[in-house]
Image (cartoon, rainbow, N blue to C red; front, side):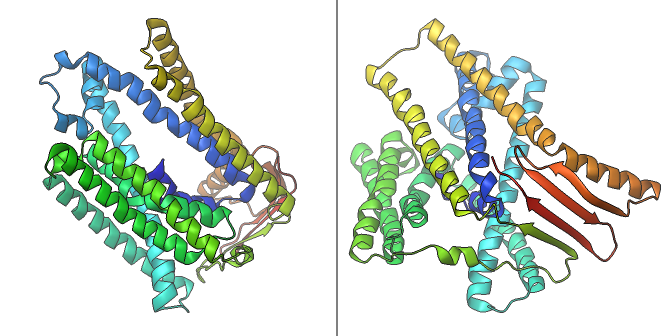
Length: 405
């Protein structure tokens, strides 16, 4: 979860969402996402181990690191259909992740570099042009980097573990920046930078001490990776917190309410929100308490309550317990599938019908001229009044939040 916490794509989605939806959306999304590694590892991972004798050739460590366990298991069980299913799954995952990262990096370079240091008075059109340039440039960079890593023999498993050493130093400074008013900018930066070097040093020195050599095999072993990740994650706390206590910034977070929104002057769509509910301090405080409570509860359940006692007891799954484990995985995955595939369609059914009616009207040559005071539901517990004027030059949507659950 460390790479996701530091992933700009997830932060952008959080900032773009309504405050009333963000906490519940990310909580549900996280629980649904967990079904993927949990159940794929239980099914295809163990099936790959059990059916390895049926493969054309035994899997090597390089095959496992390259992520070939699931494809081999799927082919062994389903034949060509399994290969096609895995290909579709991987294609959708890769394109979705690549798209999110392209947009995230483009936004960072455009707003935090180009507009902040090179063109502070940039117009909406200039910002969009720069975002297009940075998107193309980063796409090329990703392709070149992937080719270079592959030629050097860096596998997906190795890279995924290495990401923790690289990005984990920023976890605690980011978390404290969002939740602790005393967080000091210098402490946050030094904590992240120094913790990275501490983690890198620990990783390489552990590999050298255990195996006597620093190469791909030694640095990719479990203990060096574990030591480097832990030091990267935890050492930033002992740098950031003392500096912030000595020189507290006492940030009041008021400036975060005045972030400027840049719009393209060519955009003819105007969206006006009645944000009286969204910015209600009581509602925001309620959402904050719910987020804290949920985070601590899930941490306790998914780390301390269930897995750690089994590890401490060195428990070996019995047939009945393993059956229970698989059944839980099936149920979790089915609920996650329903939530991510069907629930969004059902939640937005009125809006989808409204758009579909407009498309049919355009095709038939009878475009609807106006929808006045169309009452729709935009999520559970939210009454939304939408007024749309269909015109070639202007499209105005007024959204009024009346209640939040």
